[in-house]
Amino acid sequence: MVAGLILCQLVISVLAAAMAWSLARFSGLLDWPRRGVWAAAMLCSLALPIIFMMDSWQQNDSTSTARTLSATPSGEAPTFALRVVEPVASSPRSIAPRPLRDPTIDAPSTSKLALKLRVPVFPQWDRVLSTLWIASSIIALCLLSASLLHVSRLVRCLPQAYADDVRVLVSVNLGPAVFGWLRPVIVVPGAVLTSEHRQLVLMHEQSHAQARDPLLFGALLAAVALAPWNPVLWWQLRQLRFAIEVDCDRRVLRAGIDVASYGRMLLQMAQLEHRLPLGALTLTEPVSQLGKRVTIMTTELSMRERVRLAVIAFSVLGVSAAIAARVEPPERARGTLVTVDGTQNVLGAVRSTLIQSGVPSPAEMAARSRTAGSAGRPGKARSAA
Image (tube, rainbow, N blue to C red):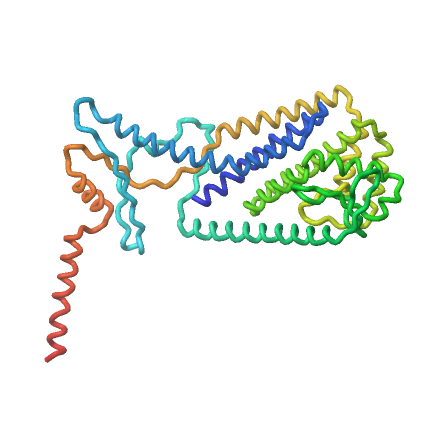
């Protein structure tokens, strides 16, 4: 079960990332916000595998019951379905013949294009994977909590000041950034207060706080900590952070700020020595990400390039959606389905099923114990003599 859930989440995460990349490209062509696309992709990657598999299992169980009841002719006694768990053999010698299953339950799919995630059911794998999953999630949540406590302790010790009627906290090498998920505060280095780009820095950070970007990023960061083994989720989180910064740049530039001045401000802030704790939104990014932001702000695409990018985006979106429509979750392990006529004895049917499965009856177990006891008596008598 756990192995199937992990595989299903990886596949859905990849498909959601591909579709989000396509929609983000298309949103950029129309100058629309991008952060909602990546946030939706991360939520789908986390929630859809669980919902998908639970719905599939319930549907399989209801289908089996419906087929069993529909097989009963009208006017006859009803037929009941008993599901008996097959025993697990402890050694190769004690392997019992596998009973026949209902062919209507395990019938293969008739579609040749259907992708089916079939994961073998190994209980020892489930135990190991469950332990690793829980341990990694606990470690990730502990690291995130420690980082938040460290940031809150640092922020409490910082002196506050007012720059252009905006309350800020002044640090030495922390920021410029917005800290706090529920009550965001702006933290800037002391050098920013005397810089010529002070107003642009404050506008950028205020835009983050007003759009509730720290809350969105922090909530999804905590959600990723529930499945830290998934590398696709971490990549989606990085794309979400980049989309948040691009959307913030777009809001600031829409206020009438000159693109050249704003770009020079980003380059100047990137040269400052600053630290960024986990979970905070900063003005600057790594050089590669910062270069992409400047390119997005300064590049004006022609109509031909827009059409080409739109075709690529919709092609990736269509292929990903087609694959997602054909993916089926792994089926849950099922026992032997036995149909019992209503006029028969239910206990007798269960007894016959256990005999077919290789499980000895109580009478046979008692006979074996008596045989073993009688075989041991002569030895005791000789030893007494």
